[in-house]
Image (cartoon, rainbow, N blue to C red; front, side):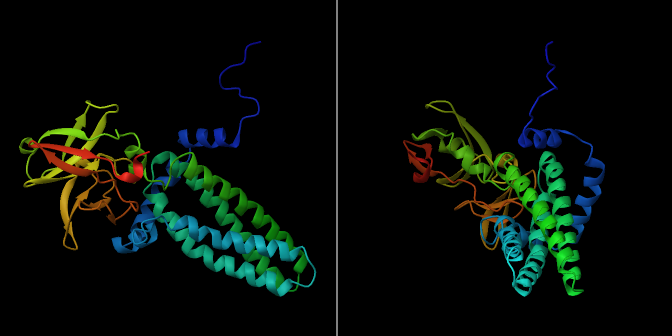
Length: 304
């Protein structure tokens, strides 16, 4: 008997999570929670700090190492005699670190695409359950019931570890937190890309230029300023938004480009993110003008 496409024996965890990302069963809960997160995280500077704009890198992943590491260490100590106080201290440390970790994760989750939000919701629920078990473990230990305290802690460790695996799927399989601008830059030609006469470009307005005259097509955002021009990969580092459709603004004395999708803001001169939800810089190309024609090339770090 032929098997239908929907009957997949031995379906992997990754496949199950991808199916969850495509399902809309959680959307009725996700929408109001996302709205509440966005209301709580004001002003924008607070959310930018939680995204990691100041660092140029998401802060949720490194923060997450602290509670998980503390809880794993507590689990090892609980397996050995004579370490009750040390294990209890590590559990409390993990709970304290879970607060900023959850806040940073919520900030990133609220600005992610819908499939990532669906999987991220399960990640958050599992983490919340793990925290509840660890709180119960501390209470049991404080009352002298160390056997119950250990059991609750091991249950919390199992949930937290499983949830960390889901976080890895979000990052490595679904691209949450990665720089989409860097990925786009790697598809560009390694040669100088001809973008046409400089004088054909409008002054001070982002425009799209697509070159087909080399080994790979190039979609680029170009902003002309007099006899020079800024050329960026036309992909926001957050979720690949089309930068050429964005607006120009000034932040801290720097001319910046605002992504039209989620408001990620980048300095034209070097591509660094100055406002979230984007945290990674966008790729700015090297430029030159030859015989009146603007040419651009990807930075050295992308040449191989």
